[in-house]
Every structure is written in structure tokens, then in C-alpha cells.
Image (cartoon, rainbow, N blue to C red; front, top):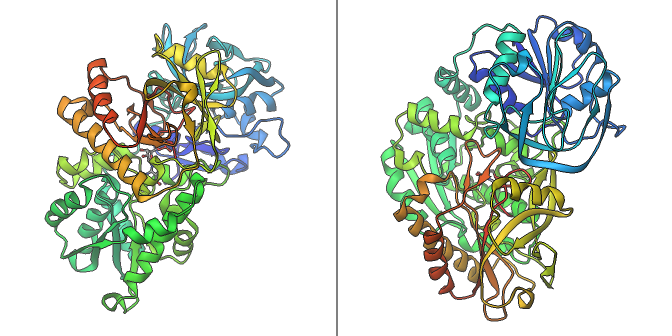
Length: 583
Ligand code: XMP
């Protein structure tokens, strides 16, 4: 099928998401390499240039065939795509005085078909530092934000449009309207794609990838692996699909029992639980760097798989590994040509990559996002108890239990305290590993929180200090690792928070609620707990959610009673600039 819209990939975290949002409009779209020659794009009705982590002035930065911009086909540039378009057409791009990450207010300043139906101030989602300072000749500025004058520019005569913000992410409320304006009105596409009709194609793909072999599946009890596993059962039949749940010791309280109870009803003939707690703990011993922890876990899964496959039951060699990988796992793992590595998902480590190269992996959901996975799950009749669970990452509590080899104290800042703890973020499509800032009170508004972080260098998260066992300047970080004791502490804290939020119904108001343990406390209470309730739809962008004060007070009372817990903090950072998990 020839796509009506091609998205040129210059390395953006959201490149594939753009194509998906176009397909959601009922128009077939595909992603292509940024340097695809204009001649190969003949027949497209519109072209979109994605965002990316590079700067146009960097000599190695990705570019496009400039002839694309003169082909007469309407083009929409997004973020880096806007900067690239401006740069190639003689405009000027420069480093902004400060970055703009997450929430921003955009206001249309000129009527234009790209912004049809969009009026007044609009919440848009940004992730950039560079910006267009002078648009190329023929372009008008059609919308601005406080820090970015050229938030949207247009040259309707040439059919060229560009925006600095991200219309493809859920947090840009007017994004669907803007994409629809470009795709349907400006590019003149017609509907040729049914977003809901993909189930049969997925089952065909499973049969094709399995190629007569059987599928051995690791299930975690989470939504992705449950849906992928059930799709395999449907496509191949119960005789050809085997499921194993690995108890890594990194799971939440009660998880193994939940999986045992719920998986018996899915129609499988063989389902087993493998106890590998000691094996995983040993593999993680002494590690502190987030990526090192992730690699160790991924490779340990490969070892468990080999051990099981080499057991008598599977000796015929006719088995391939099934995984519930979804698209964000690939993109964040730096798995497309030019995207930056944000974090390596457990199902994208070297050992798994080798199996992929050998054609020994089946991943039915590899091009789907979380919300689509849930929709597929409902289509195939999976119960809500399984589908409505909050996402839980494959590497489990290991990435929510922060480790550090360093000692340190909080540094007093004009705004609060810089914590001696670093976590992973995503700013301007690049990975960051920076300190968190603790502030004494909740800011008055979301805008205030966003502008605070945009002003600060070397910070990618802001937390509110809710309670500490001692004064902040007396709290300290000491070398801390992934031990059974710390994992139990986190599991206990997580169970307390989960129980209270489930009972109060707050659980339904958030998409995910990581509870994180950071090595920051007092000699007797060496760790603090960070609460991270967020709202999202697909995990690609997220906004922090504030819980009612009374609920927070109740949680703090119970957490204070947990042995070893010396503080409670509340993460109020959006994604970007932070990521959802701390690592
Ligand atoms: P971040 O922290 O990157 O997370 O903003 C986005 C979403 O992905 C989940 N996540 C993972 N899920 N394996 C998974 O199955 C992983 O390695 C992994 N890492 C992050 C995270 O919980 C959030 O929902």
C-alpha cells in the first residue's frame, strides 16, 4: 500500500507516533529515512519532517533532500523538522536563551489553514532548546509562545508549514486538529485506512514470524505481555504456545499470586512459574548505573530462557521466544536509525537483539502503543482486571530503587535544595542524567513548575519535600546498592501507597503511579520514598498529577512507620523533561 503521508525520520522520539496519529485519522502513513530522495516520494500527498535530538549547525546532523521542499507536495516540519526546514530555506536558527520542556502556552497570531479551528491560548507540549529566530522568506509567524516567537510558521503559497511544538503528543490538546488540518485540508488526503481493523493482520504476522515453530513466552502479568501472549494463543493454538512467569524478586507485592490466579483462565495448556529471585539479585549485585542495571536484567532473562529451552521439554529446537515489546520500548532503546538512547528496555538488550537477528523472536505488538494494546486486548475479550492495570516496567522495582556509589548532602539553592541523587530524563529528544531539585512547597500552578525547571541548568526533575526525618541540610546520601533489604523496603512502601490509592479511588485518576526509593536519608533511615503519580495515554509524554492533601497526609503517616524510610518527596515533573521512571 502506498502511503499518502510519509514521515521523514530525523531521529525524533515521537517520529513513529506522528505516523500513528495520521493513521488514526484514517489515512495510511509510513515512516521513511530522512535522506529518502525526493524522486522516491513522488505520489505522496503530504510529507512530515519529524523532530530529532540534533542541532542544524552540527555538521553531522541529519538532513533531508532539499528538493522535497520544492516538489510542490505540502510539507509540515515538526520541532527539529521546523528548524531544518528554516535552515535549508535560508532562515535563521539559534540556541534559545533557555530550553522549553513540557508544558507551554501557545497563542495564534495570524489566521492560517494549519490553525483552522484553533483559537485563543492553547496548551502545547515542547521539547527544545534551539529555535527558529528568523523564518525564511515567504513565511509568516502564525503562532507564538512566551519563549518561542516562531511556535508555528507558514508559507501557504509553497505549501510549507512548520511548528516548534509537538502536535502528535496527547498533551498538545489542539494537536489532532492541527494534524487533521494538514493531512485532510492542506494535503487533501482521503480516508483509506481502518485503525480498528488490524487484528486479523496481527494474527497473520504471528503465524508468519513463527513459521511453523512453537512460541515460548515470558509473561509478566502486565498488559503488554498478556495481550501478546493471548494473541499467540489465538493465532497458533494452545498446543503451540507455552507461557512462563519468571519471579525475578523485582516484582510488586502479591504479583506472583495474581498471575497464578489470572492466567489459568486464558486458555493455555501449559503455564509455569519459575523462581529466579536469587539469580537476579546476584546479577545486580554492586551495580549502580541505570543502564548497567537494565542490561544485567535483560541478559538474565536470556539466561533463564536458555536454561528452560535446554531442559528436556524443549529439546526439539522448534521454539522461538515471544515478547510483549511495544513501540516505545524500541524507540527509547535508541532502536531506530537516528534516535537517542533514553533507556534500554529489558527486551532490547544484546542477547535479545541476537535472537531477533536470527529470526527467533515473535513480537506481535512491536508497532503498537499502550492505548492501542489495551484496545486490542478488549477486542479479543481479555478481562478488565488484566487490561486496566497500571503499566509496570519489565525490569520491575530494580529501576525504581535508585543506587549510587557516591556520598553527598543536599546543596542549598535559592529555590530549595539540589539533591545528591541523579535520575534519567529526556530533553530535546536526548537522554539526560541529572540531579533533582527539592522545593519546600507545591508551586501555585503547572506553569510555575514548568518555568522553574526551564530556568535551571543541570536539573531534570523537581520534587516537593513533603516530610523528612531531619532538616534537609542534615540529610545525606551514602553508597547504596540493590540489596534484598532495600528491595523489600521499596516493595513495602509501594504496597502501602497502592492500598491507599486503590481504596480512595485515586488509582483511577492516574495512568501510572511509580513509587521510587532514593538513597537519601539519615543514618538510621537511609532512604526516602518519592511519589510519582502521572497522567498519560501512551507513556510517550506525561504530566504529573497532584493528589488531594488529605490522601497525601494519610500516605505520609504510613510511610513514616516503614523501617529505614527517612523522607517522602512528591515528583511534580512532566515528561519531558523527566521520564516517568527514575531509574
Ligand atoms: P519512561 O520512564 O521512559 O517510561 O518515561 C515510559 C513507560 O514505559 C515503561 N517502561 C518500561 N516498560 N520495559 C517495559 O516493559 C521496560 O524496560 C520499561 N522501561 C520503562 C514505564 O513504566 C512507563 O510506563
